[in-house]
Image (cartoon, rainbow, N blue to C red; front, side, top):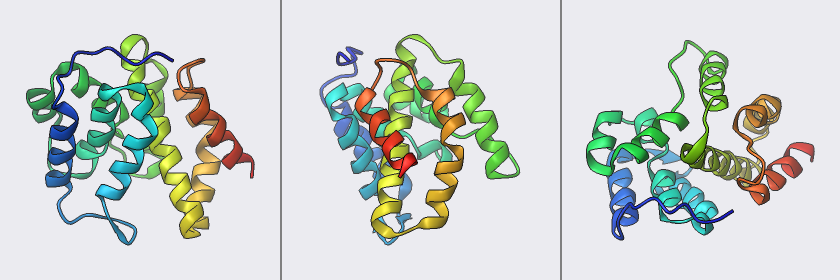
Length: 173
């Protein structure tokens, strides 16, 4: 897939990383600082361009911090905030309820905003890799059970086949 040519500015990636690190503060990703997860997702999407990396750094900010989508829009523009909104879990009383609503939202995405789905796939891949490395069988079982509906909602042919191929291999292992 070609790099997304969204004009986001040359310094936007560093700004997004710094913004996300400040927003996540002392949050941890397992035993690591949260930045380890953000850097992992950004590295997976690096070949798809800076816009993908910006969204990767911001993908959990609204869901996991006090930052609102309006602040993302103000700091990074409408396209980035729209993509962050797509990957942000919808509210719900349980993980199952949140994911049903979120997957429904992702299933309707088209056009340039499909870049958000690429980031969501990279986020899931980073999470599954982390589960394998850390031996988190419980969370891996959750990701495996969600995989069919996740793929049905987020997969777009020719969007990021390498990511989906690895996700499928992990799911099947």
